[in-house]
Image (cartoon, one colour):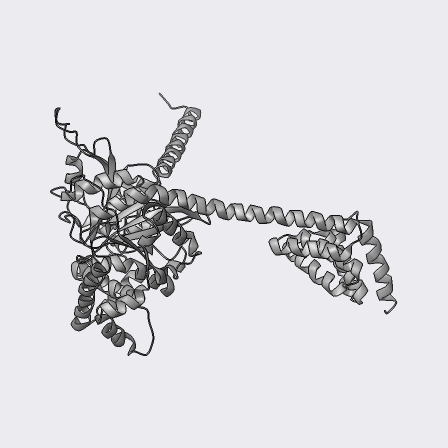
Length: 592
């Protein structure tokens, strides 16, 4: 039977419509998981033990893992399709994932990481950059970007990442969640792809400090018990000076929270640069080798350089053979850094290792068993997607300097969110000595709620102060208006001046003061005020009229005509502007 052409067109139309709907649905699915996952899977926990035995400690929780962790039967992708193509599926599941599943949690998928887990931006051109749920126009942070996004978007209760030079701490800060980097060596790395072995740690993300702690007790194999409280909380004052937002936005929240829980006497202040110069003597030798001692550089910035060199050197040592054999297409910046490492001598690498050992002793001595060091997580707000800021020397040096403290000392560090600044998440980091992981988890548990309350109080007080100043400015303006009506020109000027001091972004205050100045014959002052008003509000007709009048009285006829004409453009029916422009044009034409 011959086909009806009309029917063929109908079928084709239905097929295209189906493809369109499928594509639309597929895109919707991608948006709904924020691009966090490479692929979904299910690892279910064992059955609950029969009473009276306690249930598994992580019962009811779901988690995801960065694509660095082996899961039996799945290829560990390392953030690059060429790696996935050239490696077999894992023959066993990593120890840390197995431990969590046996503890009662269900693993639901693998998440996106940076290319070869190398960067701290969270961007991946191969699999797509996970969308930061808090601020979609900005990077999520890396290397464990997908794991952080999965938690921030409430897709899982917690997730695993690897923190080498900030891979958990940075995305936690950029996505507004809690991120924990444990002490070096505290958690097994068996079945986890190495990035830089002497710096790598297995970390985790959560929104809820209770979940963060539950996961910590399972992974650290520590029993629940009485909380330990800190006996000193040390603010690294010079580190806070590197912030690119107002220092008080973070520092005051920490100070107020500490005072509320432990009293003012626990707070200490330290210039970390000075302390490290005295306690890490190899830094001086490293500085001299780099600059011949000619340039002064802070200890923190030197540590950033040391950490980056170790990171690159160890990464290259681990993966150089694969890179040379497969020749994958890599980010240009990455390739340049790998080539730079080839020029390092063995002596320079040994010096970096010496600094790492001295850092462990220095930070442990500073914090002892009961101290907490407080630093910003990063100096910057999350950079915009595709922005070049994150590749700048200043960004790299500031960010890696702060991150190097825990990475080089091997200490544990937790990133705690503190609300928002300019709609972007801000955070603070707490560092405890090596091996004090449970103590640090206890401290977060104790202080988390107060941190959030104090952050909100700080923001509200700023808004309240702003509102209060705005109200006072309006009251001063109204008094000025009343004085103007009563022809008390000097008094009106005083009131309008008070309003401007309280709010110098209001065009009306300048324009009104100009009107009073005109009545007093202060034409230069009137012209200046009108110019300020126009800069703030390009459509302020009264400001153009008053500036035109001031300029006419000063003899600036051509400029005055322009002002009156512009007022007419804004308000074509304004008779005053029309008459004034006509009159001045006649005066100007007459040669005055």
